[in-house]
Amino acid sequence: MKVATTSFSLLPSILSNKKARLIVITGKGGVGKTSLSLACVKFLSSRGRKVLYNSFDQPANTNLISQTNTDHFDLDVESSAQEYIGKKIGSTTVASWIMKTPFFKSLFNMLPGLAQMILLGNIINMLESDEDLTIVLDSPSSGHALTMLESPENFKEMFRTGLIVEDIDRMQNFLFRDEKMLLMTASLPSQMATVEALELGIELKKRGVPKVHKILNDSLTVCSEILNSPRSEYPEFLKTKLSLEEDLIKNLEKDQWPLMPHFSLNSQDLVIEAMTNFLSTHSRDSA
Amino acid sequence: MSDLAYKNIEIFCGTGGVGKTTLATSRAYELGRKGVRVLLITIDPAKRLKQVLGLKDEKQGEVQKILASHFDAREEFSFDALLMSPRATLSRIASQSEDGADLDNPIVNILTKPYGGMNEIMAIIEVQYQINTGLYDCIVLDTPPGKHFIDFLQSSKKIVQFFDKSFVEIFKFLGKRITKKGEKPKKSLLSIIVSSGVKKLLSYLEKVTGKDFVEDFIDAVSGLYRNREAFLTALKFQEDLKKPSFSNWFLVTSVEQGKSSEAMGLKNEALKFMHKDSYLLINKSLSPYLGQWTPKADDTGLIKLCNSMKARENAIKEVAKEGYKSVLFFPEVLGATPISHVLELADNWK
Image (cartoon, rainbow over all chains, first blue to last red; front, side, top):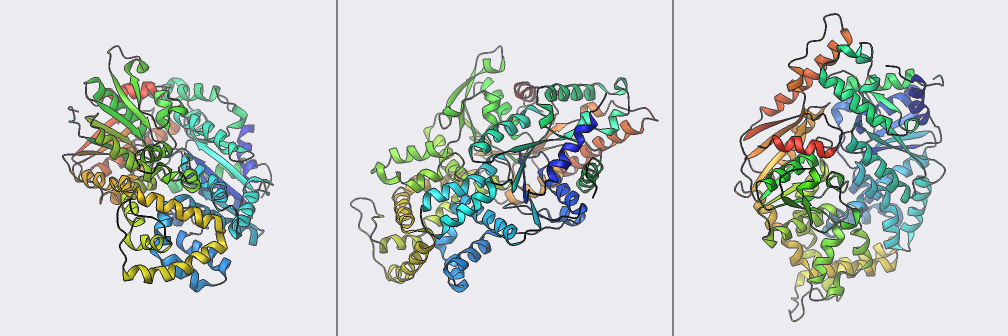
């Protein structure tokens, strides 16, 4: 089987866009968002960029982060909110008192969108105060990623006036203008995952994301372990798996779905290393 | 595997991409085929169920009849399905309220948009409502992945906190009607103490968010409070879930990269909500195919692939050793469409 190796350079070149300061990786659950996000951080930092990984509102996989030795930071909703309120009203003491009330605690619990908006606001602040920084966001999966990106608009509609609305405008400018956010939806080569990515792309555009990039992860069609053997050597199930995948890819707009190969490795940190090497090998511009 | 007796509630949970939706559908299909009155509910906002069942977005929040013919089955039977819609659940609560305008509030309306973030909380209320209708022998629940599933399980606790007594004092102070018509409001010393702090708090809030919001917000919360009984029914559901006679828990995992450790993590978190009578479902198992495969001795590439596939199967079997009532294996389905997957998996429940 022949592989169009030129298309391998597409993903590294999308990721290398220096305008992109916030790289958001989302997609259906289980498609490899965390591995791809960590590989993306490793790849960009190997090219001399200052990059940090963040797992947003999900607890970070600390084992994997330390195994792969990835630069990262963690945010906590309550302290982020406290910091924000503190800045706005000019007193950290009052802010901490407000956040301790059962009133606010239960409010945050009932409104996950509010918590997400505060985290996102904090991330954008970090990026605006350090022009050399890039952040890779290992985002919640599809539906919850929509909640995250929709939350600024929802809360703007609710608040209408006040200091917070100015801040939300600033957030939205960062996210939806000037290509500062690079949004990628990852998929596995299955109908369920690719359909979800396509639907998600439409929903994201409705919410103001100008361009949605895609990645097809874990593809057998470009897996080096099997491409070196003639197809006649494959067991039946592998032949079927491969042809199902080929049929699926045929129906996708190929140039828009850069592929990441399947790696026959048994631990996630090794897969991330292999992904990073793959990106570096196929990157067109030198480090 | 032998026929597995159904319970009132069957919960499919697990990390992302392991096949919860497809497996839950195959279960509903198989029970429906046996004549059990089944409702399949998805509370994942990603709504893959829509794709599997060929449903339309507009039908979100409405119970729909799924005919076996959708799956090209020869037998005639059906089961019901519901794509969770927070807005639809809220509308029903409002329609049963003595003052329908209670919940017609800009804030409540925004939050109950499909991606407003209220999905997990409204879901627990919806499920309890569907149980109460008495129309079903069994409700099969397809849940959101990972952390959001835990959010769902914690919903009733959040609801209770939200309607917490001390919190309510705020609104009493503001002169809002939080009691039902005819009910006498109680006054307490506590309310006066809390209120003096609340006034300050609201004035700070106003500075940051604007005055209109504070007014809408107070209206929203007092409206919700007057309808709290509709929300607090969810508590019963949480209690019932803990009873082995009431629910079957299916923790779904799959034979893919890194899934075994994720499954362990989720189980540990979900443990405090579930009972010990739970099942582990191992999906996308390649074991049936791998047993017969021996690559040529000099084919290093295929040997590497084969060994890595076998190693994954073994890693997941380690998870299976951890005290489940039973472990069920579902082989990887080599079919293109979700329908072909459902049909083949359904056979495995027999």
